[in-house]
Image (cartoon, rainbow, N blue to C red; front, top):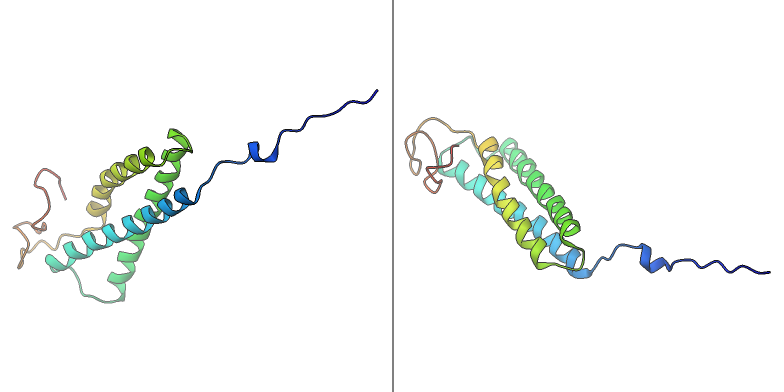
Length: 135
């Protein structure tokens, strides 16, 4: 008497990854890195914070890379929560969550010089900053 063992296919065990998901993951990483660095650098430049030395560049790279890493992890989590085959819904949720997380990132890394200069309002906040968000 012979017994045949039925093994599930290897393809069923693997998670479904697509080239589009990997590409969107990179776009999320690079996009959030760019937006964070531009916003932080413009707020530093407009309010006269520090000089443009290697120390400020290091802080900018650390802040932008941290935000980009968090947004990429959010992309992966949103993709797992909403289903691996969908791409648009997790992308929209990731962009919204990243926008919400951008405020604390800028609030932590922005150092108000305390002296209003050229483009800063009194109190050292940048001109484009909404008044209802504390900085």
